[in-house]
Amino acid sequence: MTTQAGQINSVPPVSAPLVSVVIPAYNAEMYLEATLVSVLEQTHSNLEVMVVDDGSTDRTAEIVERFADQDSRVSLLRSANQGVAAARNLGIANSQGEYIAPLDADDIWYPQNLEKQLDCFCRLGPEVGLVYAWSTYIDEHGALDGGYKASEVEGEVSLSLVYSNFIGNGSAPVIRRRCLDHVGMYDSQYRECGAEGVEDYDLYIRIAEHYRFGLVREFLIGYRLIEGSMSCNA
Image (cartoon, rainbow, N blue to C red):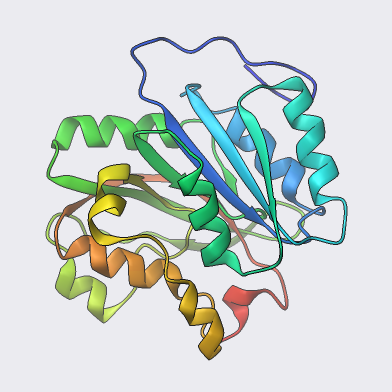
């Protein structure tokens, strides 16, 4: 099990489904290493980690390359700066997993996040297209700040989702790939009209029109609140 850059994880069981972790990264050098370590420490180890460097001018690509040199599950994709939706779509288009797990480059997952979300998919059946878990809020140093997102909504969620984005953030869900094949991927046009940051919400609404949602009632995501970040810009 990987605990730091430089150690290679064990070979996952053949029967374990492949999860494609997609991380858009723009000038993410401050938090990206902690994010990657949290992915590579997942108890579900059959992963491919697609990091999309969205035109960074800092050490983002260097950090990813260092991890990729030590763990073959990590890959670096590079593009001109096009925004978070386009970066996620590029990562998904180059991935192979049965499940897509988006993760922002400053957030973290706690070790059993993917294992427990996949167990939920298995328990609830094929009509479930998205599973999410609860999030704790962490500060710039990774410490809990007392905030959290813990909704109880699951099943047929369309009406609840129109009322509010109860999932809370883009790092909380795992999505069946076939759902994206059906409803499409992230809409990159929101950036053009000054509304970048709502791509997640839009995608969840489209998925909910056709699939049920599952919920893991545990705090498995660390959602980082940073002054000046996109999510803090109402």
